[in-house]
Image 1 (cartoon, rainbow, N blue to C red):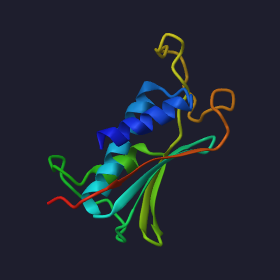
Image 2 (tube, helix red, strand yellow):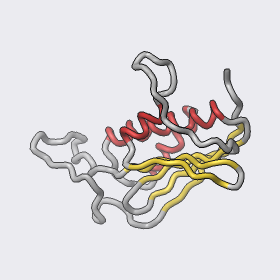
Image 3 (cartoon, rainbow, N blue to C red):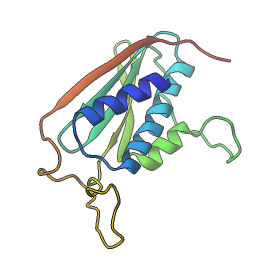
Image 4 (tube, rainbow, N blue to C red):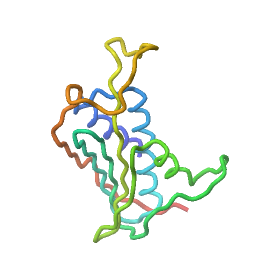
Length: 154
């Protein structure tokens, strides 16, 4: 899972989307959660895809398990069960889609503006909620990063 998360970050940085360090940290966290769910809850192969639409960054994991995940109530001290709650809280949008061979679970992020040249935000600087055409490439970009076998864990 750490390797897949690093690959996502490498690809996204290579697209020169000029994301803030906070956005990259949230992206890494959400990738960890969505990949961990596929590894934990399926027995077949999974495919991780990253897509830049020109305004949103989408990460999608497809797997061979037909059951669609749903957030579940859990306590703050629970060791598991909070992944989809984190995704719902931090992502711009997320969802699941049945596929002919299983399902796809995805989330989307709307990047914020980049940090200034010194890597710091000024206290009075406003960060726009959506990227502008001048700071983000508008071309559709898609990368399928990795297909990996998974196995249920007890």
